[in-house]
Image (cartoon, rainbow, N blue to C red):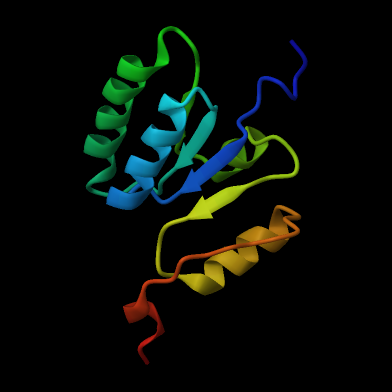
Length: 116
């Protein structure tokens, strides 16, 4: 197995309700998925829930990878990198995409994020 074959085909950045469900759904279809969420007061429960779900869907394969470090998350992705962002800070998405040399960025911005 080459190094590129061991990498995830897609990343999910932001593991709230939508991000978590999407990551689990993609992994359940036998695609390798890397997940990232910042650490806060709720993240330990989130990471524990993802580890339980990971055992349920993996059958011994490493399909769902959870990262707490953004650099490790980026390095785990196959190039070209595909990342789905699930949070409201659009300016961060743009900076992240530039840093990771992403050619295309598609974001779903919650309507309230644009209310000024």
